[in-house]
Image (cartoon, rainbow, N blue to C red):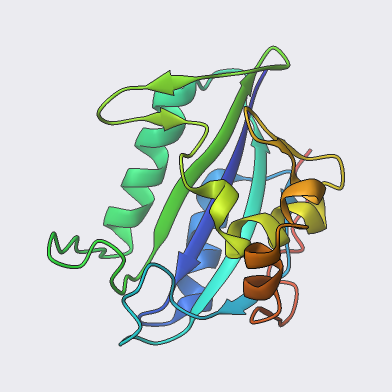
Length: 173
């Protein structure tokens, strides 16, 4: 069984519609509420983001398959990557945060795929929604998400997040 934790965000176009379209393709098991968050990474001249955490299981998908799915969803949403603005605005951003295969964390350090996500432990917009749907969440190599949220800089960033509303109510059998 392969389990993925995605962080999804959007700050251009119809943010909620872009996230919902991605969720329909992923068929998730768990989805956080929507959090409105300020831009991260120093590129502050852009609109606020809608961010969610998503957990999905699929025994047929490995890490590379999850990555390909995320990239396809970004392309379908019209995402344009600007090398001058790596943290710039986007119609959809789909980051693989962690993947577990057979209950064990997958680690990768390749040019196209690093697992767990190398910056996840620094991002309140990843950790807060994830913790909301999985109180026992653990970021491989970094520790329990509940403990990461106690870091002063993460806690300060977390206060800037605004929980809005549920986005996903569909159940799959």
